[in-house]
Length: 116
Image (cartoon, rainbow, N blue to C red; front, top):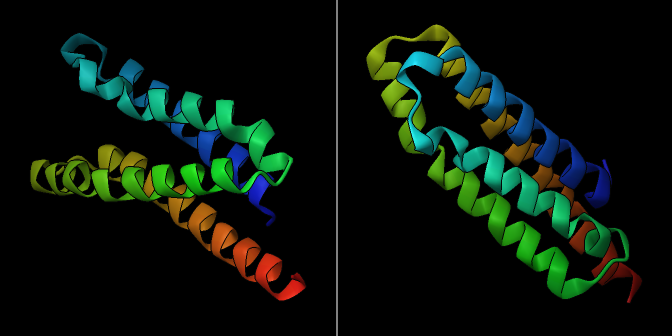
């Protein structure tokens, strides 16, 4: 998967899964439920720069995805501790999307380095 497609995939996954999680937990909705959605929107905003192969924007996207991946570790621990299988699945799906994006970015950076 190329970097722009990986960015779009990761952003849409964060937005959709984040909104689904917020809707499922609606009575006990906490504002932090919208953090992945916000990060997904930021990634969508970075997408045109990633498509144009702008190095600075691509590196910002990589750092952002890495931060998201690290930040999702604590919610995953919380869902595991709470014993919520749907919550575990939601967080795991978002983490998997971030891992796929990271692998795509690394492959893209390697290919760009070989080409130059």
